[in-house]
Image 1 (tube, one colour):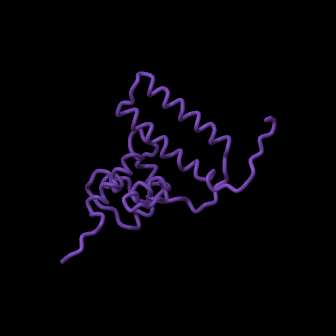
Image 2 (spheres, helix red, strand yellow):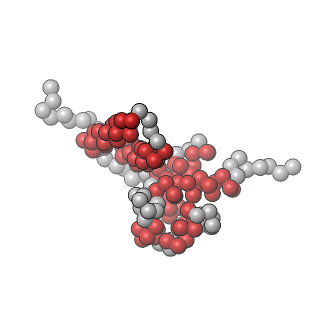
Image 3 (tube, helix red, strand yellow):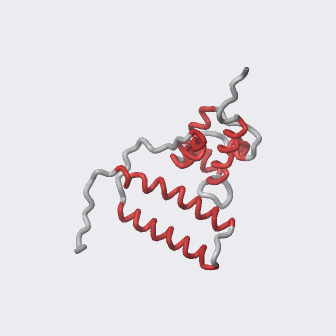
Length: 152
């Protein structure tokens, strides 16, 4: 009797394709050409990964994880119950976090102005908050005191 993998090859490839399509391409955070510069993987090859034509090698997958960050790797690792985080010690940016939260609240308010969130608004909101999670991570690991000069 053969053991089936917990996560099929097709599922793993689909997760990678979805995570790549969410971040790379026209109107997205990264272009395929910019990703080529960051990874050394030709843009034509990157497009084939997003277009279900070719499965990436392990080394190219790791290059994508390094270039696209922990949220990309986390999307691919989610079915395993895992998430990724940067090993670089990031300094907590409290004011930046506050500004980012304000931007998120404004985005949600605008999307809900008509009483519902359509599929386009949902995609934009999801992409924004996935990126925001990376910026909030240092706040959850910070062991420094916050100075609020001029408050109180």
